[in-house]
Length: 455
Image (tube, rainbow, N blue to C red):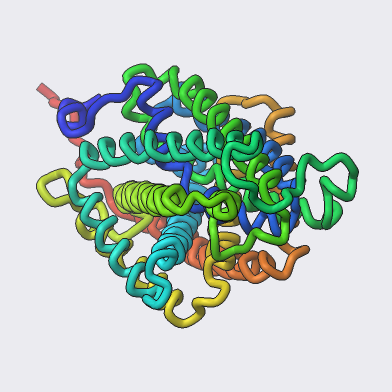
């Protein structure tokens, strides 16, 4: 570790990385995206979270083992480059950049939806613009400010979910005034799978999206005091997240009938609303905004970091590798800000279903990059073949499942469009790299062969 990096970036213990991971991952993908999954799959959505948790663990375990064996600042894109060549590092980096831009669009939209809980007449784009500016301000404070804010938000988000679990249990025992007749625990196949298998399948993408952010832990793992602790940190984080997700969503499904859930409201607010707890609903909505904001900031941090490493490897213009006072990557943040502005414009033009489109496309772009991680681990560290097959199968199931529902199908086509554009650019760059290599070989040597001294 270079002294300059050690001075500017605080080294992390394994549990600190776990806490940062929780802060970066729990967000609107869970707090709002789960509503879409519930509408698709009903109670079987719990199985989607469990399968997604297993798939996510395999991807992170592969990434953690590569990090332990060979810490790289560029993390997954550096491993893709080492495994398959420059084209893979280029493609992986830009696919990830595109996915994070979509995630930020998704988060900004969700934050605006949550804010309209209090101000229903304010247009989405006004809230989105405000949150975008606040996120950039946080990133400008540097890594120390990012760590403090994400750690604080992580504690608040976990506390909010635990609070919901406690309130839901009290409601089930009749402590609060009677609410609606809930769905109860399903005891039949039709009760568990009200829409059949074709309801669960498309919902799988939203289960994976709730775990989106493990790549950020890969980027942060370079700051671990003990690089070998990366896997332990990830295991603790994923076990905690899977437990919280399954228990909280399960209780929400028991408290109120399925027809009460909608894509405009978090399932947790929907579940508590009939029990005469208005203060709790307002408090929880505030936490949802904090959760969404923290994951948006995490995405902003990740996308800036990956753009800097792309530029450093000459896979992006050199301008984006430059930092102000060796700390703030202002040009990279500027490009990201332009992308966020486009997200705000889209929220203005197509406000109706933009959250579903952004969420599906963002989740798919993440999964495409996860396939790169699994493939790279097989070549660089001979990661378990069985785990690679299982992880790849779960990811492909989630990708293909988006074709079977009208809500997720446009997001699939949107992500496919991004892949085609990135693929075409990659082919163009491959020809350019080949030409540059040829020119380098033709260039005469600057060294002159000296004749031996005859004396």
